Length: 415
Image 1 (cartoon, rainbow, N blue to C red):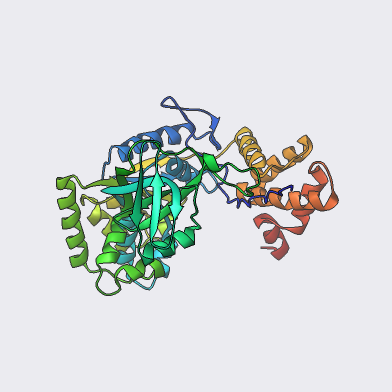
Image 2 (image 1 turned 90 degrees about the vertical axis):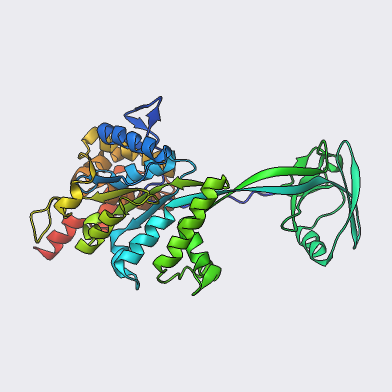
């Protein structure tokens, strides 16, 4: 019987082609990991990456540059290169749209960006099932075999996992949980259908002790200890306001666990896009938490030059800017735009003629990268409908006639 493979659906976002900062032995390459140009900004972010990896706290970075210069892409590249650290991304507009106070919304975002790695020693039983009944299960390894009694709860899990003789399973004693790892190689039957993982019979003792690391954020611990809603708020997402007493309690517990060697604190990154949307109270609150030991690295992105009501740069208070590290980004050249488009086209697996690519570069120069990315997707739909091998120049021009850019709207409205 021929089994048809179901293709996976991959959702592409605006920055799906970004996979890192383009680092190579401590240096950055012009075009790598989907990131093009911005050499100085990327070098600066490599230093920030080092600070995060060293678990540093209380650093605020401002990414400042014109619209479409890749500020969000750089932040995302940093997040992809930071393994094992939380990267929490929000938009400043979200702070104003929530029902809770602005300070509480920022505090929760900050606490979500700090991880706690909890070390736990667990006892497990791992082996191949050789016999199974309603009240007993027999497991074996290469070196030994043993029989265990099972209760109603364990029997339910066995039925749920569809465990049968010949399967390799793991039983976590502390949790009373059964995990089916695969099928023993002794049961390798060509008539078995589906994606089945065949494993050799385990060696050594049936009983093993392993160290497991579970990661949660400080906000998760806050929500669990919040007596108003408790752990149920983790599933609903509605944590409301959490009192400072609860957070102080959690901080004391975490500090105690760190001294006992039970947990490890990992400060991550909080990225706030459109930072100029924050009000004066928001910046004052960020100023306040800078000295806190549980503060992550905070990265703000803005394309604003100055505030509308005052002469403060970037729409951010001057006293706040004095405490920040500022990383400027520059506008892309035509060659940069061409390389970015090529990376995006390769990611979307779109085939373009050379003339069509030249037109897309011109569109980038006049209308921006975001509009050009949308045009690529629409042209691919048109190519499939027309049953062509490649997207042609006229396909792009036709799509641009149907979907106007910002300049086209201005001409249409004549203002």
